[in-house]
Length: 145
Image (cartoon, rainbow, N blue to C red):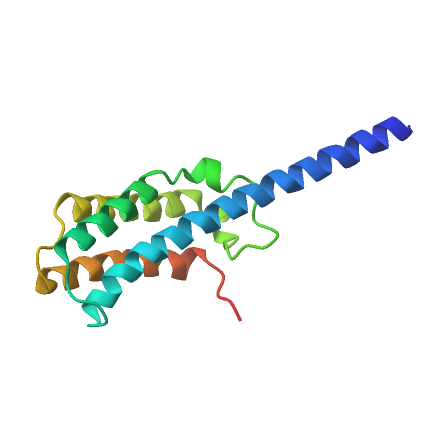
């Protein structure tokens, strides 16, 4: 009986650790995405000079990160608890969530394929990216505070 209890405890601990890793991985992807978008935002807001090479690099890095998002692997059942702002709606409406992720993948791929060559072209490009982020976050992220 004692071995059974130890085995169940070890399994529970391993499962909790696995979900913690998934959550940490999700956070790392979102942090990287935010970093790349931040480069673009600074240019649009006039906090940094427009730099076509920096735009291309940021959009490429953002797209590379976004294309690696695998909803099934990153949001497995049970990873909705712990230190996460992922909304339960992700697991209640997986098709809707997948559609949002797919849209984000399309938007970032299009931007990376044709990076803005001047500030005026960057503004709507960043707007499309931001709109995609915002719509997903509004529907599938728990607001902090």
